[in-house]
Image (tube, rainbow, N blue to C red; front, side, top):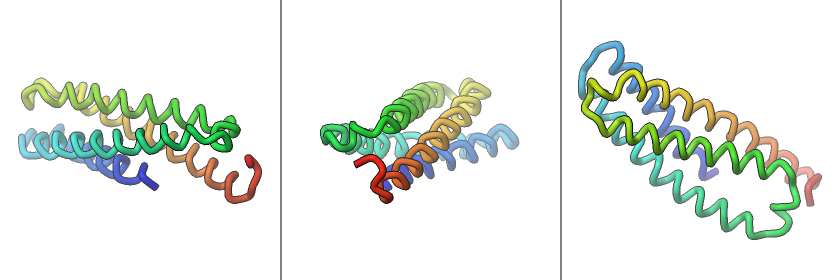
Length: 128
């Protein structure tokens, strides 16, 4: 559930990056900066919740949690690099910022699919 807010922020940042790449209006780049910052803050909070959840033995017992955690870590690292690229001036942030935004959203999509599989398995009682 906590994954939803960072996903929305990063997906919206991708859309604003695309808008900036098409129009070169600096306002779109500024929107991206704020969306990426918000996604990283809430993403870090979600990572803390995930680490606390990993302390439970029943959660660690499911092998699917490790690819899920790795995909989320990759997404947050890509998001961090995306934030660093976006901290440049507007003209220096593209096209690398757009590519990193797309890769971050892709990594979060993989994370969402793995999370859905984990929730489906746990609701059926498979990994208990």
